[in-house]
Image (cartoon, rainbow, N blue to C red; front, side):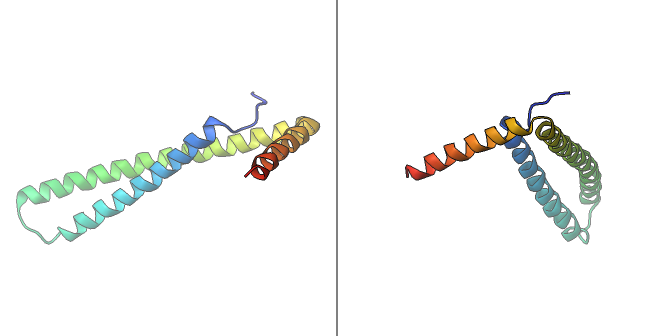
Length: 111
């Protein structure tokens, strides 16, 4: 098990994944609305396309739910690892936090 605290590159990729999930949910909502709007339209070809689109959306929703669950599990694991690290290394954690606070204060004071 790694004692390294969560952060750095992982945070930005998690944010990007969360944004991708949100965008994909929006696309799925729009596609569902389009399918419902064309429900009264006739024709075998349109019915076949609508059925295929509904099946694709259902599969995409299932994959998205799995991805979202995996992302949540990783976030919980990262939070737990951070908690363990801080409890195992309290003085080091305080020192790192103080150093980051000083650095941020110094950079903000220069503006």
